[in-house]
Amino acid sequence: MIERIVAPPLGANAYLILDEKKALVDVGGDFGFIHRAISKYIDVKDLDYIVLTHTHFDHASATKDLREVSGAEVLVHEKEYEFAKLQNFSSFTFGINFPPFEADRLLNEGDEIDLGRLKLKIIHTPGHTPGSICLYEKDERIMFTGDTVFPNGGFGRVDLPGGNPPLMIESLKRLTEFDIEIMYPGHDEPVNSANEHVKISLKFARMFL
Ligand SMILES: [Zn+2]
Image (cartoon, rainbow, N blue to C red):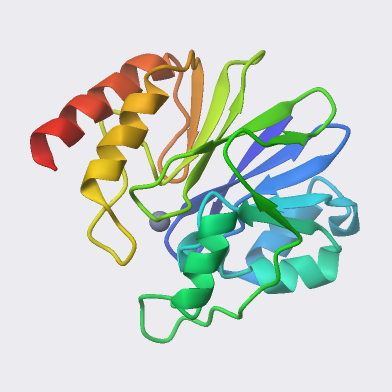
């Protein structure tokens, strides 16, 4: 029901969720690759939603092409979309093409994406970028965490444009309040007993930020 796709160019995780509605959480930076990867599971035209945890190029620069070809709606946090436009859809890396994309729905804290069985709640977790989000499914106790928190005490960089160390600590603290069994991070492998991982990330962030 949840397929992990490791997407070029930097190995960001995209997650294809196959529920009554089909959603892709992050798309990576290579349209041809993600198109082929999704096609193994569904007709790309059946994709309903593209949900972006944030707009760094390694997670999001294939968005415009995938939106056009699939007809899927692009969902992104309001502040993140603003940030992407302000940054002029910068790739931070010379030579990577990041075509500007249109958003179809701007997300805010507490909003819900209803996929049928799974209902993803938007948790606004700024720190890595201004509009980074995590997506929480409370019955399944799963969370998609983008580049906010990684397994084994990891957390996202705060030294890129839009990064904010105090907000990162605040966001990690908030995440410790959720009951999470499985974490689906934006890089690295999904893990069980995610609560413990998040606690260690908060501890490390307080030590190092
Ligand atoms: Zn990032």
